Image 1 (cartoon, rainbow over the protein chains, first blue to last red):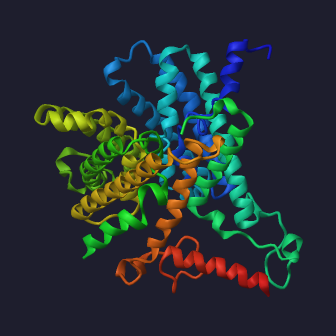
Image 2 (tube, one colour; image 1 turned 90 degrees about the horizontal axis):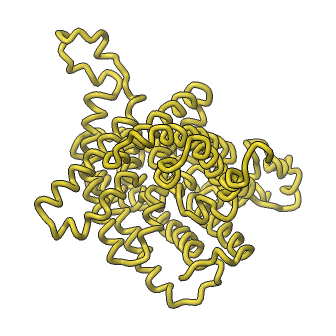
Length: 217
Length: 248
């Protein structure tokens, strides 16, 4: 990491594990869970958040000295809303089907707590470069969880990844792969409650490995 | 009848928390005690009841394609009757919500200090609660036809959210006395309980199958939309299909 000082590198690395926005800071869960039934949607959502948070953090950080603190929430909302409109229009232009799947959840990036949380906690008090790194680090930490959840839900629920069958052919008569041995897809994984349970299990694993994260009941 | 149906649908079937995961952040953060959960839940009902109809008006008369048809030609706006401003809806909705929340806070502080003391601290939180913006965005995407229905939808969704946070807060108060595995304590177990509750709420899916409204809906998962009317039945069917095909 020649380019980054140790402190800057920590900004990128911490959110990936010990300060993960979803599992530790409990931010950004709102839109994270509903769209993770497919891996592709999770990836697109992560990239959208990466774009909005990275750029938004820089913008807010550049304006931090001229925003009156009384109306900062509204200013922040306007900045996010503008960036989200850009994302939404780009998605509609280049990936129309996917933007239909994501439906209102693209719009809900605006109120994704992770974005307001990072603006408030970091961008308002730090320079643009550090704010940018913080934005990237946190949105990657968010994306990692989304992609893990999306991976397991699509794999176990539909037997596909990114829409390609990976566990063989489930069509009767031409069974192949795992299905030939009597494997069945667990359709339940595609339903919304399972997202919560998968995230719960991720939290469980993470905290068992790093016992300092355990909280009081 | 229409109102009643939408009301129960938005409380139970399309429950904000359990069906669409809206407002999860504050749901998890503020559900440690029943009393605070009630405060936040009441504030959410209130703000949803105000902002959803307001945003409905905004959508109907400004943002929708052709919504500006009421604009007098004298203003010289070309093609006002075909103009589509819906790409602006995010920014307009969130501005309305932020303003309304601020306004409500001022009004409540002025006229009812006791209510302000119980609701006040939650109001600023609410501007960035996804449930509020989500309510407006779902109102738009589900094309709720009248102002009255949008009010019903707002109140219903608010009550649904209130029920959810009340239930989880009560469970979390009790669970403090149980021996949860250390790594699951706090957040982990809350997630899993919410998941289980969501599974329970799915059973409400069959509640409105006799209604006219249900017939119009096309289930997301079903392969043959014409004879399966509600989501849950469709899902059961898909699962059953999978089982059958695999057994053959």
